[in-house]
Length: 272
Image (cartoon, rainbow, N blue to C red):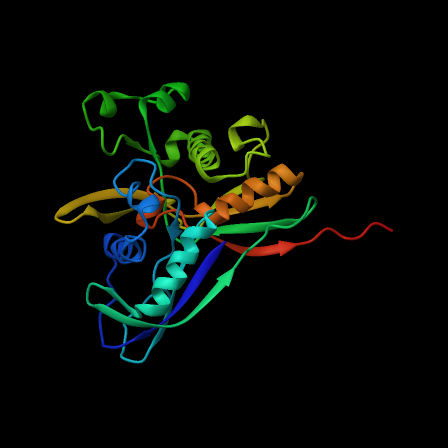
């Protein structure tokens, strides 16, 4: 499930590429009155939401229309945000100042068993491998052992695709355990992969950005963007893919990383 806010610019502004912390703060303003959500504010696991960048990119002029999407597997969280943004229309992201004009809800679905399609990462995937995962995949842990605990070991193409896919699957498993439907097995409880194909969007595969996880804290992190092809095997696989659409993939999703869009879907042909 997700909501889309249609935003009207109230002033000219340059596009702020370091928007992550500011957008996160604006979303939290809509949730601060709910104790059930407030308790998870500073925890490692968060409360279960992901968000896109303000799009489209580019210089902003007063009166321009922009959009932002916020997704979550928790309907109550989105309901709170709908109520809040219906009352509090200002949506400021640093010098980018907007007013919420419309709020729409969407429930993208990858389709029934036999459906094929493609998911696309609208924001970069944050993937920092911890020591356990690095050892499991035979990677050099020298940087981790040196004490760089916050960044751990950022995934790079020369690590191979298996560590990246394992990290994505593991983070989605945690989301399943906290906010998912226990009728289904989790992503780590099945042997098959989440995606049939993974193709990089950017030629360089990974790219650095400046990231501000908190006020007055600046870091450089490595991200990657992907086209993720799929063929739905069964209802459990459908659930896993839809959970990824609701929660995002990778780490730091509540800071605006790993947001997914459904860019293509083909339903199975009816049997003769």
